[in-house]
Amino acid sequence: MCASHVKSDTGPLGLLGRLATALFLSYMAVALPLAAIPVAILHWPGYGNGLAGLAVGIAFFSTILSRNHAGAFADTRGGRPCMRAGLALYVAASLTCVLAGMASLPNGARYAILIVGRLLLGIGESLTIVGMLGWGIGLMGQQRAGRVLAWTGAAMYGAFAVGGPIGLAIYEHWGLGALMLVSALLPLLGLGLVRDVPPSQPHAGGRPPFWRILGTIRWQGIAVALQGVGFAALGAFLPLRFLHAHWPYAGLGLTCFGVAFVAGRVACGHLPDRIGGLKVALFSLLIEAAGQYLLWGASTPLLALGGAVLTGAGCSMVYPSLGVEVVHLVAPHMRGTALGGFAAFQDLAYGATGPLAGLLADRYGYGIVFLVGGLCATGAAIIILALLNARDGRRKPA
Image 1 (tube, helix red, strand yellow):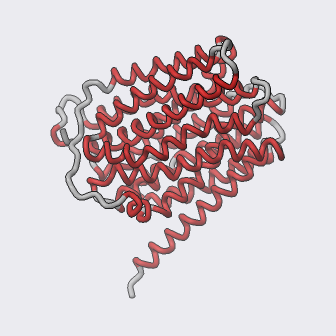
Image 2 (cartoon, rainbow, N blue to C red):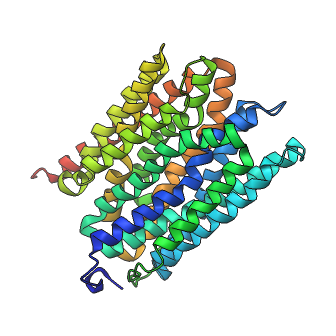
Image 3 (cartoon, rainbow, N blue to C red):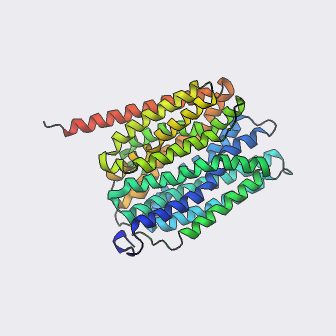
């Protein structure tokens, strides 16, 4: 049913809150293992940072490959079945990865099983996030798309904030298998929460080729991809940098990032709808760049935590701000496909950053990955500034 037909005793905002809560719980299947997987793999003889980064990043490649199908699923069948299918895949992926925690298996087999599970998780993430966006915007209306994007990200990275240290603690006390079992149980709770949320109405209309849609949103996509490098570098390598430097509280950097990220979404989630996505994105990218440069040069854990806070605050509003721009560039019946393609740019950055940054870290140390993240955020800010200047030029009278 569309937003106008939602029951009066449960308004659209309440339904969006339930979707966001379900996403928070379910996204723990992604967040809990994120910091623990590289640590676990580095304990296996012969496995270095490159393979550890690949195990983290491989999920994003399957997400990229499935974004078009997830978007078409959400546009034609609705966000509700799309998100529910994604949550079910979260469960299946985590149960697959339970086998990777079996010490009786050869490390090669454990790594292969882990890769299969991570690939399934990537497909599940594609369906879950695109479905959540399509479902939420359908219930709230396009005029509040920025709020839906902000709440979706707040749920995801709220889980990221608490999931990092919890995942490391579970791994250290009970091992990888127990961690993956917990990761399988939480999406089941999410499925229960969204069980009776009404569907949103799909929009009818013709479907242009996916590549044409990507061309329409290419600059917004490139900017969000460059932004994603810093996030991916922090998620995969900040705990390892703490451990390598013999600093305490290796999981706290992820918490600082996540808390700043969620605080930014809560405080500023309305700004893209009010003042425009490009302005918010530009300011956010400059903050992210500052955080990445601080992480690069940090000589103490306190400075590193400050860099994590700035990175989280900066990353917070880039995706929803540019996502609002994407929603305005396409017809409503192509919204899911466009947002899926937009997210694919970010997924590409996430997937490539892990293994490439791992190779750089092996050669030059962990600091270099944050220098690269800062340079990429700076490049994204230049792109957004050019888009703003072009828009202002079009508005000037002849």
